[in-house]
Length: 359
Image 1 (cartoon, rainbow, N blue to C red):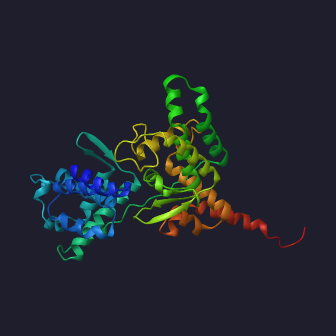
Image 2 (cartoon, rainbow, N blue to C red; image 1 turned 180 degrees about the vertical axis):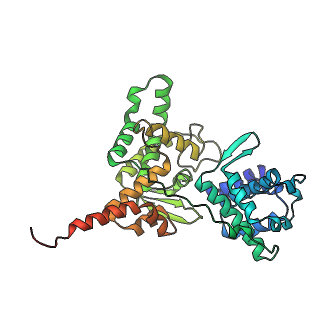
Image 3 (cartoon, rainbow, N blue to C red; image 1 turned 90 degrees about the vertical axis):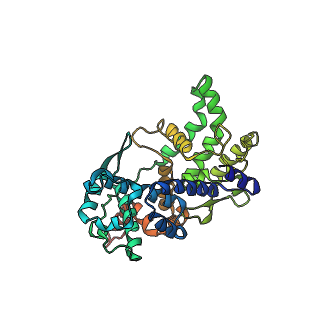
């Protein structure tokens, strides 16, 4: 980590650059535990994927090899480092089907891990990509993963806050201090403007929680009321905000002026109570803390605030392409999939909008 600190001293390292550096170092550690031939695959992936994707795939591929060691008698006397690329040709479609079953519940050391539909799909997709690389480069002659169906995922109903719940949530953050005493009240007063700014920003722009915590103070432009965010995949984009977000951010900026940050965190927009850049987990926790006081039937997370914004924008504009653009969806079909139910409601209105005969 000393090298990272030296690198930081030489130039301003953004949150995303720092995350990439940490992921690269993590990936190197995971690769040390994987069979040596895996390095070729991850080297080939580098120009096409983010560091987050590569580290996720590395963990997923490691689970596959652990499955072979735990469940397949042919490999009971092997260690993971013993595997060569030839092992991939020994796997049959039935083994992949058994792996899918294994993924639903398995032991990881002392911990029991489970996967739902999305987790299963991602891990099988990772394995398919892994096999495709070696098959394409003629290092193996079979690819059993293409003979097994990828698990289907069922679309979930979008959970979002209604307009009155949004207002109640913001009012609660603004005034809940009236009911608090002692240390809780002290902590609330200390973090109130920050929390209100974060929640208002998430509700008023639909940015992702990772984009929010990655913001630097220089990314906020009050002249044009825009913030520069780094989207999934590394693209930069300016997202614009309205007067309510502007007010909440400006109020927080006044508080931020009096915070002396820990060295290396001077540029962060939002600080934790330890005077460091706030993390994703902290934002998730504060959103849950406030939201459960407003609704007990909806499990509200930062992503649900993003859905709330997307829904409001679509209801106001009816422009799915605008919603996709502002939310940073690379494929408008992703957006259409999420807001299809609303489209259906709008189509129903069309049925009664046209009168064929005068009454």
